[in-house]
Image 1 (cartoon, rainbow, N blue to C red):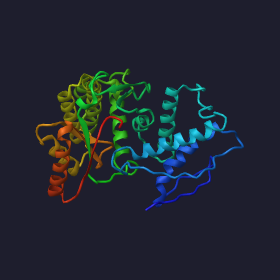
Image 2 (image 1 turned 90 degrees about the vertical axis):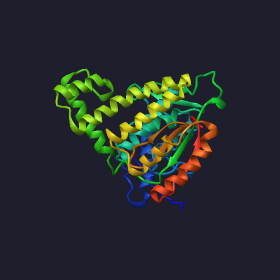
Image 3 (image 1 turned 60 degrees about the horizontal axis):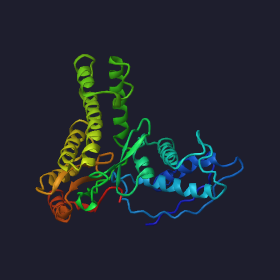
Image 4 (image 1 turned 120 degrees about the vertical axis):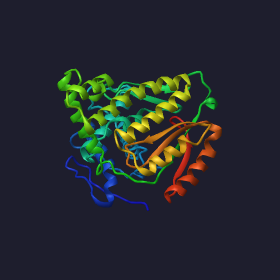
Length: 339
């Protein structure tokens, strides 16, 4: 199935519906780059899209499409007198600033044109990721640093690998529970802000703040769960980056396992099939450090940190046991940081 879509580029462009909804991710990005053109100019192009990122699996397929489209448009603009990002606030931009601006525009395309209230993480790693590195991103300042598995002096042959397992349970963040989680986090933040005005988002809060709000400010039930997940996940993220650079794979694995427990119980974005895959990986035995859901949840994929010489055995085990337990097939592949 090779769908074809045709549209006329103009500021009044409207979102597509039905089977061609995928083209909205392209159209939305095109609209973000129109300000770089003169008033009497527009884009005219034929674009063939080829990709191998599974759709709706929590592996940022929409962000990869958006960023690929953005880079394509940059090439057109740069060949047209180097005007890519000429409308940006701080133009001309350095290469690092381009990566940041590209991610911002792609996020806006998904927020505004596609109606998905996503954050910027997926677009940013697609825009700024480089081979052999992970990114630690501050989603507020957009500052980031590259994280090497085992540190700069480590040999890639010594590092474990990642096994990605697609549960083949599909999700759609725009139509599902994701917007509900966004609203719940905002409501939890409002309660914390009343208790402490310096808390403007959950990333400003500590676990002590959450506990205090639970005791005296009425933070309870689902909103307490959501706040507890976000705040603890932020702490785990920073700790994981440090452990990755030190090559402390055991700690990384424990943090991954704790992350999944939090997503399952407090954020409630896992599902039966994902929990089966995570449990299978976590109980596989020697060779596996940790496993968790990846992506927006409600299906999609798991990511497992495993010793390289155990990866293929784990893959065969997951395929066999997942089908035995669920009656469905999963798809696994081995990868490494930004490979």
